Length: 376
Image: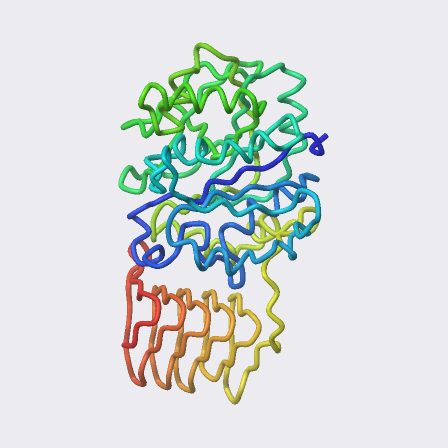
């Protein structure tokens, strides 16, 4: 079924609430879970659906993303036909190279959309993490005769914090699954059904909607395309019942990483039936020297642990010195924690260095974050 679909991923989201995490990288390249990037999940979902042509729209700070993806080999997308197409911004008479929104970005790559032989497009963002394949969604889309099918999840059990609201699309659906109402960033949401930033539609319809929105000065996809046309076209919802992590803020990034320490969440996001692929780095297993230990933690390969780690996520190549205690923290790749340090509720970006004897602490609802390469 999915052989008649191609993927289109927009990675140009700019969320100031992620603060230092996106200072030098796009949201798609934000590290997650010890050895992955946010893009790994949506890209693996598409590949696991049997889709072999994927276009990735880049906009800003995309150098680390391109380095991570390379030729797409890890996702089996280095092909003579189809494969992975990275679509960075470019300047022409009609295109300034600076996108005013998702509509502008998609309009700039309509040449890629048109030359695909597949009929359907799976359009996604890159800041929402989940593990599924799109086969069932595409089958429902065809069976219902929908114009657009929107993937959503039920967030009834999660507390709503407006300060962390970002691209919050809410749906109301009837008993047949047809969307009856769409709202975007509502002050008080009247429904727990929240969009997962994934859509299925006919590629010719995408072309029409994007050109029509641009002609009317609309550049936001959710407002200028979805909400504007909800009464005009048949919109259906496809409910996803698994775990969904939305990287809306530093607090959400921290919470979803820490949730990986729960076995049920780890089993859902890393379901072996739908493997999550990432860039391979051949490093030695983590080494525990002397009294080094790790409890209820994820420790990636290449690490050297001489201190104590508890309830933490430790990325590749991290060094933790003797006498240091790391609790409730996320330490990203190649960071160095020297001897006799105490860290609690901290997020250290790549390549940070904490000098000996330092005490750094945040709070569970407001973890402190150190920008990439900082020395403390």
